[in-house]
Length: 217
Image (cartoon, rainbow, N blue to C red; front, side, top):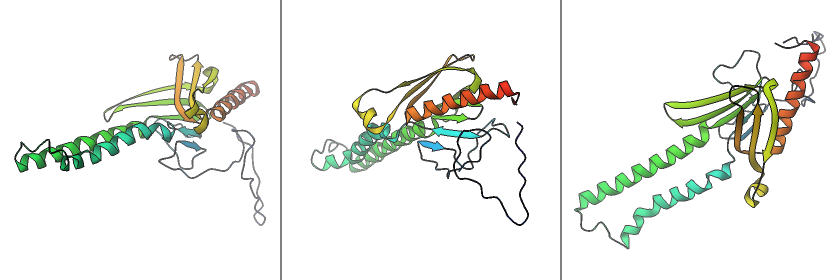
């Protein structure tokens, strides 16, 4: 990728603008990387496997945090469930040691339930760079599925936003039709879907402009 030369005086350093107009070949502000954020725009120090040296991460997306509300409520109920035994001693027929083992087993299962749901949310990510779109599907600790497509392979971007909850919290699905081997990539329940779709469209235009100008990597 050919970058414009920048000449800086030894005595009067040039102050760079904080914000950019377009995504490529512009100086822009990078924001701190937050490992638990669902919407990270130009995250600083963000990296991933198979990232090209000159490739720049534009967006890292996860499902909107509100989508975790269901399993969080269930987890809280499971954590407090053993306290019901004080009022309904359904394990009274067991020896005290077995009752204790049963309660410990219950908490172990609850912990596993919480851990699995958190990992599913944390590791199911979508990454948009200035060259590619990635959809990482986390199945379990030893298996994951990664789908990617080049920006210039994107043919259509559709935003699917429906329901009062999605409208209030501003999240939805983005369906990306591509000319790649996998014809469709779906970004599920991501925050600010209209903004994400706009960024994708801008990247497509910039990629086409690069081809016209012969600036393709």
